[in-house]
Image (tube, rainbow, N blue to C red):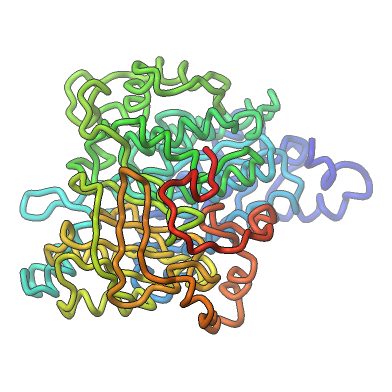
Length: 572
């Protein structure tokens, strides 16, 4: 066992003495030492139940012959940080959580681990740490929050953000905004729509790192505790069989995950996170690999933000397995191994099917003919960007640029009512290095929806969007502005064309001439974790990680118009 390095032989007497001080007995020390790592915090509902679940995981480990060793790491809550400078910490926390799991588990030579995660960045961080350490491991998501109830209608945090926009437009008064705020979040669990947390929870099950169905169980459902206990037992089985994450993570698993995201119109953040996970797993995977998954997979799950239902209703309809069953029946998924020792197809075949449900449709009766995102290229995004298609199905937008140097500037303009139909809102210097931290723009996009402009304007940014965003939105533009990307060269009034059919985002402005006088802006942060990240982070088109493979020298930026990803030098 790995843990023999810290506990076996005369030389390890000091280490054993310290382990005994924690309450362990000789019999505990001789067993495999299994990390139970979680991101518990009481700052928000997203991770609120993880410490309780850790107790059940630990009980399962003990029952299966192991000794649990519990660690806590950090979490940054997007719903609280959104729209503030604190949101810069969110994506950076993914790297810090991954690093901290690695250091705690490797630093104590532990034999296996269960990672409990609860919100947007903690979930991909769990997968990244599992791939990096490659020891027997299981991930478990704490579960979705139950939806709130306002005036006898179910609501989520999405409606609170949109109510802010409606309030700014004078459509609702202070009392109504306060009522929406108080009704939206009834208890523990992550945001309830197919936003980033639930999208990534589904991804972990599809990749095979979490048992199929376990992540679908809502946070407050009685079955969650048993799922946690089973994960404790399962990790001991993985240890005995030496079943490890890199035995599971392969290109097939990533293709399947991309299709599941497309079929549920899931968060575009999944593109960023799957790229990051693939780098840790050393699996060849590019931003272009997401396009065929979305182009050839219809939307079959009727989920927020573009649909009607939350993760709670999806759980009642059969959960992720039901989505997978429909895709498998249409030959849209490939079989692959999972953490349970059974294949993905075997796991899905064993899952129950709800007969009376309206959440998941068959592939023959889709809600939309293609998935919820598209990868675009052009003279504004030579390395690529992501168009979110979770609105009413528009595929083309042309308008004049309204340029803002930060999210705050854009939000103020929205609330002041200075944006009009046909505008293309440009928010730049919010990328991974320029932000730093690549903030989400839910405050701006929700305010646009709340003011009734969601279908009448477009927004492009080198930042990113919350999974709760819908409308005609383009994010992850790469290269980013602070590193000389063409978005940095746009001027107020420039004509911008966004076309999903040709997969292009372009302008006819003379960017080459402007480049001669462009100078990078001064760093927003010069010390601490944010400054360190800004120096180390790679492109959003590579997952915005600090992994060494993302920081290879880039080709010179071109400002010549292109018509497709192939013309931009990107191969499928």
